[in-house]
Length: 343
Ligand code: KG4
Ligand code: ZN
Image 1 (cartoon, rainbow, N blue to C red):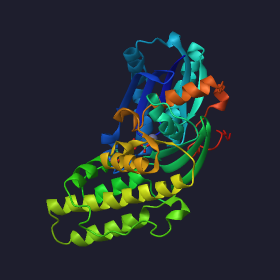
Image 2 (image 1 turned 45 degrees about the horizontal axis):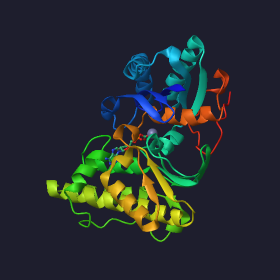
Image 3 (image 1 turned 30 degrees about the vertical axis):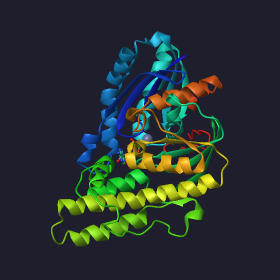
């Protein structure tokens, strides 16, 4: 069955056409450059942009896949988590199309999309561990089987991507700065500056925390800004921050994985594009006899609708369709909970 998938959870207007776990089209229209001037996503601007672009992006995805609306079997749409008014645009459109073309609807959780994004290529045995590292989430999720999830570690404050973005901003690298920070860090010495270890000695709590590291970094950079900061110092600062942030990710993950009997780790979300993250997680996997799976291309790591189509496929196989009244936005929908519409 071919699925038309829509995700407007944040600042990407994303539409994909998928068939089972195969991606026939994966169109992403990013608004990031528009939000950059505000140093973060402006919900009302995001909503307006989604409204203006959604029809075009749907048309383009259908055209690229060579699939007509008549050939689509169901429409999968992200209902949360995300920005409520942005989510609303994709949901409204999905309902309109479902009615117009008499299609069934599938309500999808955005985090489940990130979690299962490596399945676009890889096959995995359950149970497995899932990791979502993005601008909004840092979570380790035990995947007992498809559709059955248990969050086993999450962040108490900032998400990893958010922390990297904030550090990049302190260094004047623009927004979102995670990828730029990685670039700068490549040229620097990760041991040049001593920053605190997040939750040092408390790793067994199975929680992530980046706010202490962020505050320490802010103090350090503010102090240094009193005189001029050189290019080399920026490289070293970027490398030192990234190193500590990723050390924490790996340490907590190792602790959690030690307590679970899994042979696979699936990693999704924008930060999975970071080469140091990939190298360190692969190394951890090799040490622990765990196979580490990443999405097969970058367009599957950041926000996209192909991952929503993949989840849609598994839900369709289980017969988990929704009526239009059961599909609505749920801004804080957790991946281990059922979608509950409060009206
Ligand atoms: O999954 P995503 O596109 O959106 C959310 O659902 O949040 O993730 C965006 C996050 C941003 O924080 C961005 O800075 C980060 O992913 N990111 C990176 C890299 N590319 C994107 N972080 C570190 N290194 C990268 N290469
Ligand atoms: Zn996301």
